[in-house]
Length: 183
Image 1 (tube, rainbow, N blue to C red):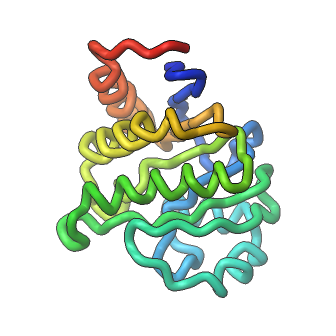
Image 2: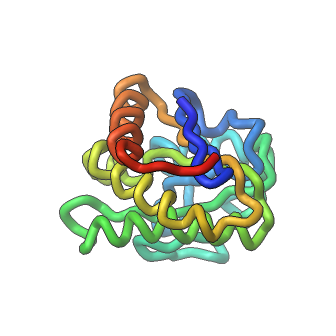
Image 3: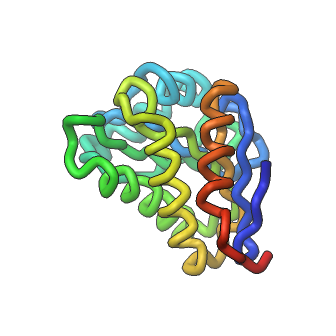
């Protein structure tokens, strides 16, 4: 599924975020220490190799809602943007912190003149953020920021399973309903 808003495409696909060769940057749903973990962080770190953790170590720790950028090392991308999403029910206010992750990742992409970025569903794994609520925050924040993007033209959400893909499709359709955007 792909939607075009003011010349920027938002695409949804199922897959492994560490295998998005058509994206200049991938976003890591990181932990505070920017180390190898489970889920997205584990997949990205395994594919990138130990140099990723070595480079990121100097930038840690980061707080919920923050983002930093590193090289991609052995990944098929140029950059990894590491975002620490909120732990649902613990880090408050969750929606603002999660929105900051997406906002700051887009800002870093613009600073590096990145044209395409792949996001996972930040905070929806072990951090427990409900997928539908997280998708609403993500799409709302991205659509809010689209008018400020100059270089970034492709925003891709890479969802690991069909259920998450279906949830994101439904939420994006709901948000787009009734809104008119020029492509």
